[in-house]
Image (tube, rainbow, N blue to C red; front, top):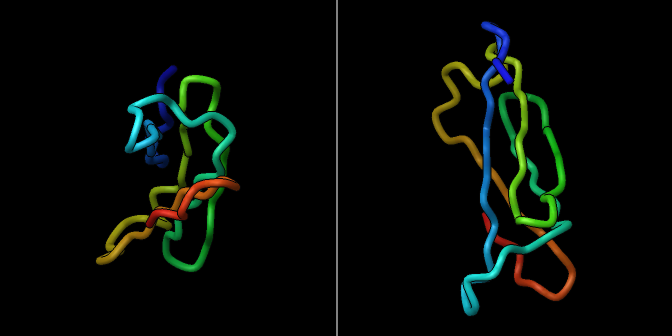
Length: 75
């Protein structure tokens, strides 16, 4: 699916570092500008966030985080 011109798509692939297996239903957040965006991983550990380009343009230190009970949070 195409992304609108004023949108940036962030894709992720979340895997367990010890086993290499996908981590389903993890919460993925992205702090961009003054807004926070969130989604969850699917059964294959994948996710997509469509972000307004105006929120990510010029952000010097973008921050994404992944959390799920039973795992150490990662940023």
